[in-house]
Length: 263
Ligand code: URA
Figure (cartoon, helix red, strand yellow):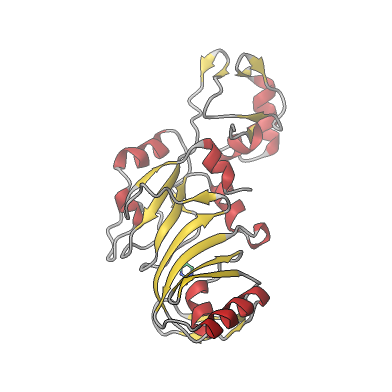
C-alpha cells in the first residue's frame, strides 16, 4: 500500500514556513506529479514512487528516511542534534552509516531521530526517521500506539500470582512517584491504563501497553512486586520487529511498514 502525504505537509517540512507561501509557490510554479499539475496543498502524493517536476525540471524532493532498528543493549536513544557526538554509552545513531546522515542533510530532510525512546538496557524495535510529523503522530498520548514488550522476570510467578498480575494489568493500577537522584530525576506517580499481560512461562511474559510513560514497563512490574531482568520491544502498532535483525542491526522500512505503525 502506498504511503501518501499531503503536498503542503511535505513542503512545510522542507522549509516553507506558512500556508500562504505554499499556496503562492503552487500558483506561481508548475508543480507536476506524474504529469498532472497540482494547485492545492491538500493533494496527496507519494514521494517514494511519484515523478515530481517543478517547471519541467525533476525536483529533488526525496522521501524521508524510515529505519527499523533492533536496538542493542548499552546504547542510548538521546536525540541530541549533533548526530556525530561521541557519548558514553554510545548513541543508537552510531550504528547508522554516515551516508544516510549526509543524505538527510543534502535533501533537506529533517534530522534523524528516534520515535520515542528505549532505556539503555532495553533491546528491540526502534524506529529512526527524519519525518518529525510521523514521529509526533505516533508518540502523542492521544494516538495510543500499542507497544508490545517481551520480558523476563527476576522472580518466577506461581499460577496464583500470574492470575493476579494479569487481572491488575487488565484493570490498570496506581504507580507511586519515584525520586531518583541520577540524571533520570523525579518520576511522577500515575495510574497506568489497562494493558494485556500474557505469560509464556513462570518468568517470561509479553505485555502490551498503549502509553509510553518513562520506565513504564519496569515501574509496572515493580509495583506488582517483581523485577524486570530483560526487556525487549517487539511490536509498535502493527509493525513487528524483523526477526532477521540482530541486536544493533537495522534496515529501511517498506511503505506498508511505515503505514502499519499508524493503524
Ligand atoms: N518501559 C521501560 O521500563 N523501559 C523501556 O525501555 C521501555 C518501556
